[in-house]
Amino acid sequence: MGDRPLTLENVQLYVSDKMERGVKPNSIKTEISNIKAFIHWAIKKKKIQMEDWTGEIDTPRVHVAPEKLPDIYQAEEVIEAGTEPGQHDHSGHRKRKALMRFAMKFALRTGVRVTELINIRGKDLDINEHDPAASKVYLIAAKGVTPQWQPLPMDMLDELKKHVNADLVFPVCQSTCNEALKRGSKIVGIPKDIKMHIHIFRKVFGTSLARQMPMSMVSRLMRHSDISITQKFYISYGIEEIAYKLNSLHPLIRLATSPQDAINTFIQNTAEPYFVHDKRIRISTKHDADKKEFVMRFSY
Image (tube, rainbow, N blue to C red):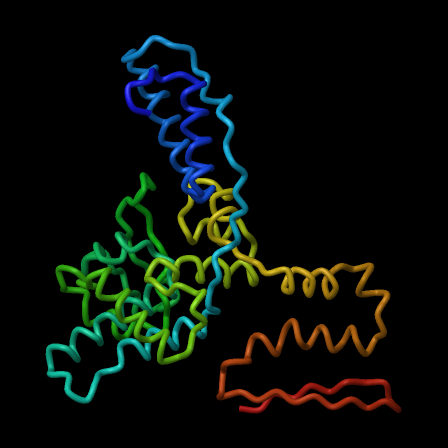
């Protein structure tokens, strides 16, 4: 604003100038947030004597579309593709890629923050040989959250046992992991509007679990101080998925469908999603119209 005084009128002129120059509304909104934060700080510290008029600043409306996410199986595929050893990789490269794969798969299964991931020490692991499901990891404070125990993924316990005496379990670099994910995205063919980075695993983790368990438990697993944080920033649903859940789970809508459609919906909502990516198990159904019965078989 040059030498002009810090007044509501001048701030409004500053915002109007940005809008006329075609600055994106989201950037303008961020700029206004910075101005408000500065004024609040200056008033609190008595650096300036003025009334707080920041609530009167005209802020442009911004439509924030939910971030597009891969599903949890696509994310796993990207990790594997991006960390696959190359033909000319020497032993050091292969070891580093294996460690990145190990770290990112752990992040996808636990939803840990990047800072939490790279600071996990061997002594933070508590692997219970007698009751593997009770195995846990002690996560240090992040974003002001109280340090706490978190369950460990059972399918990674054998590998984690090898690191209980290590200084750091996952000595990886965030930027290198992100490069591997970009590489893996191209190999797998992930749409360009999905931006793969290691922090996205936390969002994939929260979104996938929210479809299977109560939101309060998801919030606890993500170690949020308030459940509203989980709902606002880490849970993403498309309109198609919401419509499907509405029409299949709403009791009145379900009762209005035919028994055959209701049974088909039950199968689609329960058994098929549970085993869809488990190649060890096959599901088959047989409909006997005369007996008015469905038979579901599981083979493995």
